Length: 351
Ligand code: GDP
Image (cartoon, rainbow, N blue to C red):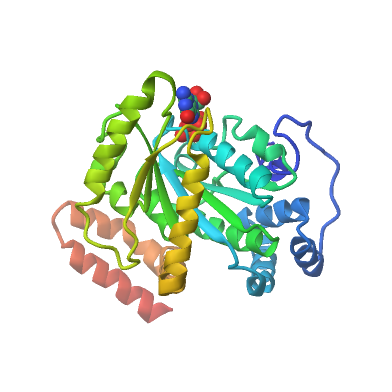
């Protein structure tokens, strides 16, 4: 049920009744042709393949991604983070609306939600979010894949992003909640990183003290409306101050802060103009391409790490010894270093 909902998000409103009839399987060529002509249903089905745990689906997904790769890359990739309640989905709705109606541009929204792997449910995905945007023909909205480790989810989101680009989406918004590793994972796959904060919610709670601010190219203090305008402006000034303490970035971009309101739409245009300014600057000075190339290099490393780890963990020689060795370490009969060395030796010798 959940995956069916996920699949149709972006093609119908999330409340639309589920279509239960079995669909005809598509060939690799049909998938690729569908994606390249911007067919949202085919795109959604391809993303489902990417997220599938079935070996055959994954193999087909890999081929599709490979075929789409030459058509990808031509987009602005924006990472968006902020604690639950900061207004991420409201802001994405507002921004998406602005891009679609104001700029006549299509928008894809992807997400990485670490909570979905722990609980099976998700903070980002389970509530009905971005319904207006998801109902638009010009938008593709996809909640976080809920399977696998953080790295695995990041990889699937990256692949989904490439397919969206091949389908002609020039604006990709990748959303995450402000906890743990997911921010770094999103930062590693986008061109510009946007932190959404709130006045008076406390720096500790918003992760500002734990380094998220350092990742941000742009800090948006949301909910600057009604009685909250002055407090939001004060929070913005504080953020601006904090941003100045960070060393100059290699991109030569000076991080900015602004106040906005997803509710009234105030400064949504300014926010996007800031994104465009960043893109113009970094494209002109070469950082844009350089950063993407470095990201791709790190993705290779990450894939290798994951694949090796999986093989290592599945290795029968390793599996048969690991528990006893862990016990030996716990009970002080050997060191962690020696235990790791022994397992690696077994793996190398018996591979
Ligand atoms: P998320 O958890 O970060 O995605 O936050 P939501 O977008 O779900 O917003 C959390 C709550 O804040 C909702 O009740 C929104 O209606 C409200 N909200 C979001 N943006 C604004 C805003 O700009 N102004 C005001 N006053 N409320 C907002």
